[in-house]
View 1 (tube, chains in turn green, blue):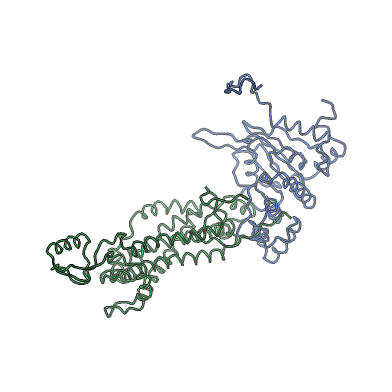
View 2 (cartoon, rainbow over the protein chains, first blue to last red):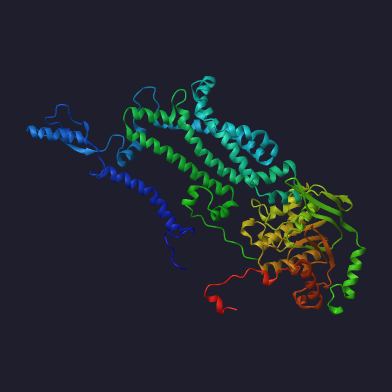
Length: 344
Length: 296
């Protein structure tokens, strides 16, 4: 076999290279961040004053723009006074990687400043609870309705035009209304996630169900299946694994609504934590919290993808072959493919 | 053309066989079947005046150029499409919705990918209201018959194309239909597998009391499998001729050089591929650059 090119068009790369590239996709941005943080002549637009010298308004531990520092330095030099000293740093809002890494631990161990403020783990739990209920309530109504709309033209014509319209109404716009109706606690937050998820969910799922191979339905009909049995024994099993994939994508959308939902009413959850920390100018904690959302989302998806492969064994090969399936499935695609049976 | 090469000349055994078939009861009776559909206000006729009686345990192949409506014809018989006129009677009752009395094998693989091979075959049996235990033992028998018992716990995607179609046949037969409708079932298979499948099908047909209505566009397949060949034509779609297959049974590939086979094939070629009236002189002359002069 000829040696395959790294940049070959269209053909997939061997697993080892895929893994290396997946690793690089994380390492490259990290390397860039490290470079900007640790290489002093890259960017570093401020000067951290260690000794004010004869500049009147400089104080120790003060950050001044480099141009200002240089100008003052020249002035003092010309006047022959004590020179101010300092070193170049980045702005506070771009902490170096090691401080963010440390914040992953310290953010959990730091006691809240105010007595009624939640700890970080409490904030996270609150966020997870909100998203869980929003998504579950949406799914309880959205999944069956989506399946009905995808299966029967009647429901599709009856429901979809309105849903199509409603999904253009931005969920955050309902914030004030939700607070008025549901109070200032978790009710309106769950409602926002519901509004943001539900309408997309119905449309996405009905679309998936509509894509069920008509050949399968016809085959089932010629085998005597009809009505409810056709729905339960053919339409639903034929689409359930794709619905599952849809749900994973929708869960990702629900996360984006979480941040909006949490500022509605009393600010809560991880958004509250991020806001407070930004107010205290603990930007390392802010970054850590944002990355935590990413990590939770990413690992949830990884977990769901793995569960999907376990509960839908017939999808294993087709998903790998068509390159569909989760992002993670594609990145860490190392599962063994079942051997193809030979002609008996 | 000598008399021996006339496809209508049946040998005494073959003639006797057709005589016996004519004694059998009619399973499927089609009278003046018609299918039209509207396109932008005008009606297009897919086919019209299709009439045929198919008798018990007969093997009928339907052959015709694309566009003659042969697929639509059997989809109507299966109940998947509605006809626009005429009647089709199965055991004297007008056919309606798709049902287990008309088994169907499609060209595309329509096994349920989420079910194992065994559960696929059990599907129809369970739909008829039999309990799981009965369904399972019946499904096993049918899988035995198509020689796939070893694969009963496999999923369809683990099987080759030919094996999938064998499961599809087992699944259709498990419903004990009155008629087995096959829509170019081996069309997607490679030539070798197709030949193998044809011989499998004849073996199964010999063992099971089943009437087969088989669509194909392959002349050799039609000649090899059928008792009678229903040839359809286009514009409008109609039956051109119903040919009694002169090749004696049991069939084998050795017969592919027999006079009966050649006569039949010649006739089918005539019916299906009418001479194309393109005169060579009328084709545009394209002058090739350079090489053109010394190329004949």
